[in-house]
Image (cartoon, rainbow, N blue to C red; front, top):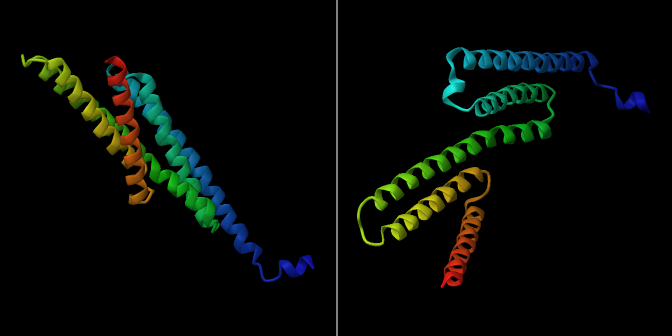
Length: 183
């Protein structure tokens, strides 16, 4: 009964595929480690740690290193025709650039909001502080919404729209509550 189950399976074919997949994983690990060591040496050699926090640089290097590992693990599972794991890893790898892009968008939004707040405060307009704060929080909110939508790239547009409406309602209710409570 057991031999009937394995009849027609070419063990040499699968052994070669398994060895190729294992070789891909080992090569990916080696390449990832080489990148990590090289990037750390480069960061220290050019003194980038003095301009940017070293913990941020190490986090960036770690993310790229793990992306290299995951790419080669994905290639190995692709070689073995294991589609479920292959799709999971592919979706995860696609989420990393979206997450980084969303973080970048938040950073840009914050920079613009701070700049405009300071310009409005220094303009000499009556009640400039209120207007500056209103603009500041509005810009932060808009950039957070766009970052949120980028982070949820895999969701359907209608679901993202419902989530955006829900978040707008929640934030608007919270702002109204704070205004009423202060009055």
